[in-house]
Length: 220
Image (cartoon, rainbow, N blue to C red):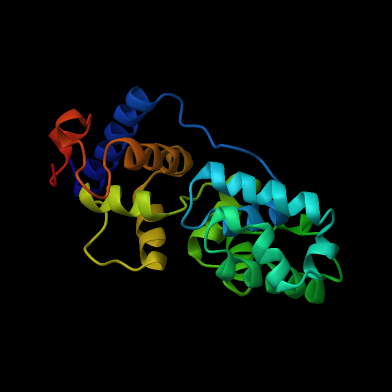
């Protein structure tokens, strides 16, 4: 068996074991591109519960994207404080919305539905504070594209499994994993690696003895 086929076979085995351990590995939601973009900015360095509380608080206070784009940074900071890092996230959200309004004449990003992946990715990465993970989340969860967002959990578990070379950059990690993982498995692997990183393959004191991947993991 060739090296490439061996790697794909290993990926399929990792996916099979993650699915067995964590249940169906389906995408968590389907939102419009702008909503997904803002929600992903809020999700940085926090848990899902606090992210959702911050988002709900923000949308209660600012009922439209236009109103949010005109918000004062200090007011938005207070509104989303529960989500953590509010001093960083608030100006990013406002600047991103203002930039989209300047380019589009509004907040409609429905053109992304039919645009190629790279066109969408380049557009998103050109927005203030949007990195590879945020762009990949919009592609995967809003547009249903076969990409793999790489957050801290995905990066850590993939690195321990030997799927990424040491000290790969975020952009490089996205590229390498998309080249390695078959398209239809990219989103399920994202979901599975996140769950595994949160519950088993933790940053500090991972539960290797209880890990379904321990026999095929070089770091176990």
